[in-house]
Amino acid sequence: MESFWARFALRLWVVLILLFLFLPLALIPLYAFNSSNIESWPLAGLTTKWFTTTWNDPDVQTGFALSLRAGLTATALALVLGSCAAFAIHRMTFFGRDVVSLLFVLPLALPGIVTGLALNSFFHFTGISLSIWTIVVGHTTFCIVIVYNNVLARLRRTQGSLIEAAMDLGANAFQTFRDVTLPLIGTAIVSGAMLAFALSFDEVIVTTFTAGAQNTLPMWIFGAIRLGQKLPEVNVVVSFVILVTIIPVVIAARLTGGSGIARTTTAR
Image (cartoon, rainbow, N blue to C red; front, side, top):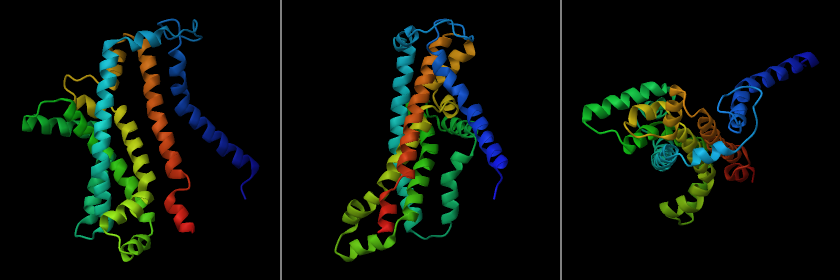
């Protein structure tokens, strides 16, 4: 049995780590309401004028629209490709299956700058001009991993006897997928899509090497911070990005951590 002081020390250490990680993130939305354009403490006052200024900034509007388009497109592609790859790895046995599975996971393990440089070199070598589609390709490379891992994990937890029973009762492959497989892995697909979109929306390293003249929202933040201009607007945009990123992650955690269909079926 652990002593009281050991438990207290562990809990205190956890609290300190969480404060170290999330306290700076909590200060950014607070600075977004600062009435002064100089970040100082204590705040000079509270105002919402920077939200109006940021919303009316055409660069911010363009960056937001581009980030949203790239994120949704990359998520859709990752959803299809990652799910198909998970089904292939789970259902089929072939030589080198473990190597193929490793190659799917590898883009997430590699640093973003390595992936960005590799994609940039490939696009220049093949003569492909940098555009929104190169951004989508870059984001899809690591978004596939999120969907792939979620769907594959759910498939491994799913009882194969349910699918066999549906086919024994006369259901064809499409009916089995629609009525049995899809409901079992539905939460994994949705959570994977949300995590992929959150990861794509705030990605800056890969975007930098694949965007060219395109200006996404993270790149606008990076440029504004580097030049030291529009810092109040940066706080507003960063607060929005944090919100857009956190919401899908929280929903995905709820979907994957709750009592899913597969878990309920197993209990029955």
